[in-house]
Amino acid sequence: MSHRTTSATSRLDRSLTSRLSSAIGSAPVRLALWDGSEYCPNGVVPVGTVLIKKRSALLKLLLAPELYFGEGYSAGDIEVEGNLIEMLDAIYRAGARQPRSRWFHVFLERWLTWVQANSLGGSRRNIHHHYDIGTSFYQLWLDPQLVYTCAYFKNPNDTLENAQIAKMDHVCRKLCLQPGVSVVEAGCGWGALALHMAKHYGAVVRAFNISRDQISYARRRAELEGLGSRVEFIEDDYRNLIGKHDAFVSVGMLEHVGLNRYKDFGAVIHRCLTKRGRGFIHFIGRNRPKMLSLWTRLRIFPGGYVPALRQALGLLEEWDFSVLDVENLRLHYAQTLQHWLQRYECSREKISEMFGPEFVRMWRLYLTGSIAAFRSGSMQLFQIAFARGSDNTIPWTRDHIYRPLDEKEPETKWIPAM
Image (cartoon, rainbow, N blue to C red; front, side, top):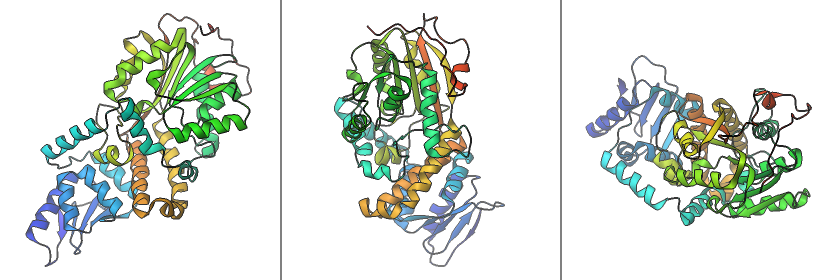
C-alpha cells in the first residue's frame, strides 16, 4: 500500500483510510482525503480516485460503505475523479470485502425490510417513490415509448428505439402470440408492451399497474392510437388479477414483488392461466442470492429484491409449470443503460431545475452503478418462458423466436380463455 500524507493528516485519519483502502483489495482505485493525502494499492495504475472531502464522510464509509458512499456522492461530500463506470466495475470485479459495522448493517437491513414490506399498501408506496416522480422526467432520457426495461440489440449499433421494439417482438415471439389471444400483464409501465401486443399481434390485453402516473399515461396513449377496445389498463395490484387468460407476461416487475411474496406471485399466475396457458417473466437477477445494497433500497428501489435464477424458478415449481426457455441478456442491459445515461447527462440541467443537483448526482450513480454491475456480472437479466406441464402444443424448436419479421407466423393451437 503506497500512501502520501500531509502534516495535517491525523493518525486516526491515516488509520481509517488505510482500513478502507485495504478493504478495496486489488481494485485499482486511489483514495484521497480532504487535505491532499492519498492511498493507492502498490503496483497498480488507478482507474479513478475517490476524493473524500470531509472526515464525517470517511467515518460513515467505515460504518456502512454501501449506504454512505451513495449518500456522500449524492451530497457532494465524496467526488470521483476519472470514469465512474470503470471505477465501479473494477471494484465489483475485485470482489472487495467491504468493512462494515455488523450490528449497524443488520439493524438497517431489518428496519428497511419492515418499513418497505410489500404488502398491498406498502407496494403502492414503494412504487410511488420511484415511478410517480413525473413522466416528464422519464421522457427526458427514455425512448419515445417510455420502455423502462432492458432492450434487445440485434446489432450493437442499433438505436435505443429500434432495440426496444426488438425487445417487445422478442417477448411476443416467445409467447407465440396470435390474433385473439387473451393476455394479462402484471406491471405494465407506461403501456408500451401491452399496446405492441395488441397492435402488432392482435392480442387482447388486460394490464395491471399500481403507478397512477403510468396508468394515466397508458390510457391516454391507448385512446389516441385507437386501441382502447383491445387493451384495458387497470390501476390495481397484481394480487387482484382476475379471469382466465391464454398468456401471462411480466416484464421488470418481479424485482418489486419481494422474495417472501413469491409463493403468492406463483399462485396468481396459476389462477389466471387457462389449462394450456403460457407465461413469460423478464427480470433483473443474480448468480447467487444477495440483497440489494442499502443505498439502492433506501433511495432508488424501496422494497426491491433481485433474485437468483433458482429463486425465480422456484415460484413456478409448486404449480407444475414447465420451463421452455431461459435467456440471459446481461450485456443488452448494460448497453441499454449506456443509452439512458448518455441521454440523462444531456438533460442534467433540466433535471437539476426539476429536482436539484443532489438528485442529479443520485440518479447518475444509480445508472452508472447499474452499468458497472451488468458489465462485471454482478447483475444478470433473465427471461423465462414457461407453460403448463401437460401442454403438448408448445413449439419443438426456437425457430419462432428468430425468424425474419416478415415471415408468416407458424400455426399454434390455442385454447380460448374461459
